[in-house]
Amino acid sequence: MNTQLRTERSHGTGLEEPKYVVPKVDIFETGDEYLLQADMPGVGKDAIQISLDSNELTILGHRAVGRDKAATSCSYLHRESVPVNFRRVFVLDPTIDTNRITAEMDQGVLTVHLPKAEKVKPRLIPVTD
Amino acid sequence: MYYRLRGSASWIGILIAESDCRTHDNLKERMLMTLTTLNRPSLWTARSFGEFGDLQDEINRLLDEPLAELSGEFFTGWAPPMDLIEDAENLVATLEIPGLNKEDIQVRVEDGVLSISGERKQDEKLKRAEAHRTERFYRKFHRAVCLPKPVKVDAVKAAYRDGVLTVTMPKTEEAKPKQIEVRMG
Image (cartoon, rainbow over all chains, first blue to last red; front, side, top):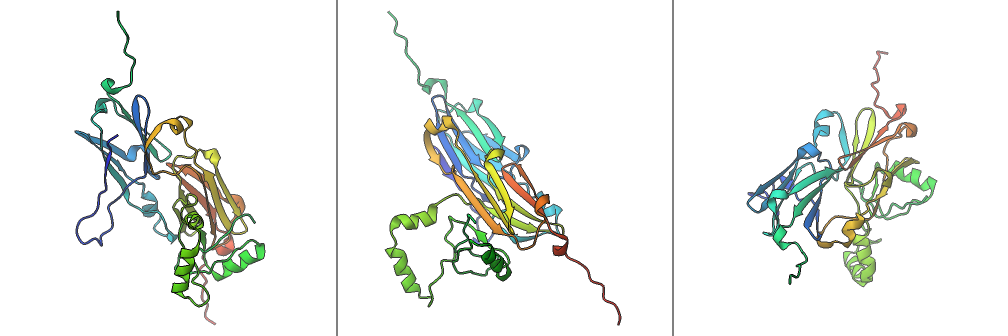
C-alpha cells in the first residue's frame, strides 16, 4: 500500500509543546482489504475522529485528560506519558474503496478496515467455451 | 526475588549506581536512600560512569562490547509509559498498554514494590498476512517501581480501560498527611 505518513509539527520557535503525538501503527494486507491498527491508549470510542478528504485519511484521538483536572490535589511523582492528543495522516492507495471503510476501537487500539476495490481483488477468471 | 533493578534513574533526578536488589534487606535499604526508583529495561539509563567517571574509558568500553549485547540493552522488551501519582488517600500508577486481554496482565504488590507484567499477543490471522508497516509491540513487558509510601496491600485495585491500566493503592494511615495542632505552652 502506498501509504505515506505525515507528522504534524508545531511551527514557530520549536520550543512550544507539540500539539499531537503520532500513534504507532501496523498495516497489514489480506486478500480483500488493508488493515490498519493504531495504538491510542487512553482514547475512548467517542473520543476518536476519523476523516477522509479525497484520499487523505486523518485519524484524531482525544486522550482523556479528565484525571488531571478532577484531582488538582494530586501530584505526579513520575511521569512518562505525554498528555497530548494523537494525530496521523495517511495517503490512501487509489485501489482502496473509500466508501466502505469501517473502524472499531477496542482497549485503546483502533482498527480501520480499508477494503480493496472489487476490480483489484484477486479472483478466478472462468474459462468459457 | 525475581526481578532486578539495574542502572535505573530515579524520577526526581537522582542517579543511582547500578546495583541489584535481590534480597529483601537490600531493597529496604534502597528504599530509604531513594524516594522512588523504576525499572525500565529497554531504555538507556544512567550507566554508571565508572569509578573515576572517565568518559573516554566508558566510550571505549561501549565500543568494545559485542554488538549483540548492546542491541540487547537497547531494544529488549517493551517498556510501556508509566505514571505514578500521589493524592491525599492513594498512590495511583497508570500504565499505557493498549490491546491486551485482561487475563494477560499481572499486577503484584510485594515488599513495597509494585510490579506489572503482561504480554500482548498478535492475532493469529494477522501473523500470516502481509505486513506493510509494523511499529507496534507484540511481546512481554515488565515494569516495577519501588513505592515511596507504604500501602494497604489488601485494598489495592486495578482497572483496565481504553488500553490504560490504573492501579489504585490506598496509603496506610501512617503515610497519610496529618495536621498537627500547635499548642501554647
